[in-house]
Length: 407
Ligand SMILES: Nc1nc2c(c(=O)[nH]1)N[C@H]1C(S)=C(S)[C@@H](COP(=O)(O)OP(=O)(O)OC[C@H]3O[C@@H](n4cnc5c(N)ncnc54)[C@H](O)[C@@H]3O)O[C@H]1N2
Ligand code: MOO
Ligand SMILES: [Mg+2]
Picture 1 (cartoon, rainbow, N blue to C red):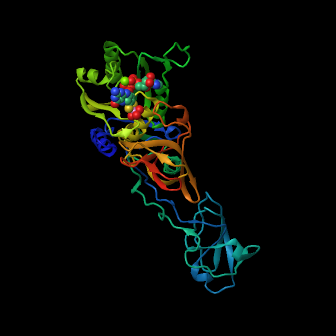
Picture 2 (tube, rainbow, N blue to C red):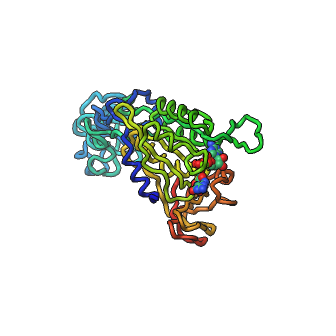
Picture 3 (cartoon, rainbow, N blue to C red):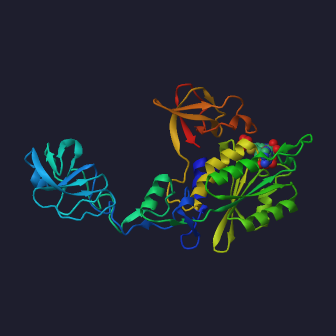
């Protein structure tokens, strides 16, 4: 059985990211939050566009104000947004407001608090250093350089940059389409009354939410009964309609676990059938050609916690690579102090769910109260981190450090 790290590496190798030549769309900047830039963005303008004042005060010639106090003649008032009309001559100053363009001839700004105004004259009380309070043209960015690289996720600060660079529309990668199937005769929709032995298909809802949260487009295809023909046609439809398919259930060794067999019948290559992790040991990863692309199929285990842990650990990073992000695909880990003792069987790398918090003293992990069985989705509800105990380790005492995967 492969370790989690080996399985992760194998899966990353199977992923071909969306291509900037064919997998893009143009969206309004107002709809670009969370999307991935498909082409680099640059600007034909310098930032700042022109020398401007960082303060409300007076634009002066530095050579005029080396000996203070000195009194200068105010020849112009320059509000932000207006072009200066005059070139400063010896002995002259311009009243200037924050953000306004520097007039020709001036090289320094004296803040208002260090001056005294009398009518159309201003006395400079303190000698400024050269270029004081001048935001120089091009000092933040020079025209033509890359402003934002392709593969960057568009967060609110990047939206500010795109707006400033006059990009009302941006070219982003399309959202990958991910079909989601739940397999199992026992499953029913949340609004159905339960017959003895039935359970609600919670995985469908959890996986749909997770796929949407990852910035992909979920295609929820519902429940498929444990009948080979029904499963075959459902999987074939899912593969037809989506880039990738995620199913849950039917990947272990039971009498009704048909997923792997059907994938083989559909011509898929099975790369992985199990990983040495708990929960989430059964995990089917298969690939199929579709045109010039490779589709991936993730058969997650049916147990609700196993399905989510497998998704977080293996599917989400792969989806992140597919989406066109240039970096940061993998899960992020931190070292945290556990507030409660942690226990594991030791045979497989073990993931314990709980809450990860950040305090002034660093990260703290508190495992969810109650049983850590892979069927217990109830105490999973407030999970924000997974503590990882390596194979062979059976406990971590309270107050000791543990590696935690952030969610
Ligand atoms: N003899 C063995 N039995 C099992 C093994 C094993 O190694 N040898 N592995 C166990 C482990 S570990 C897991 S995990 C499960 C995985 O089982 P499957 O992927 O085949 O899933 P099912 O058998 O279909 O269902 C398992 C469990 O999960 C519930 N389930 C299924 N789908 C959903 C859903 N959409 N929403 C909520 N709950 C779901 C299902 O009712 C079962 O209780 O196999 C072990 N067995
Ligand atoms: O590994 Mo299973 O995923 O323990 O329940
Ligand atoms: Mg089974």
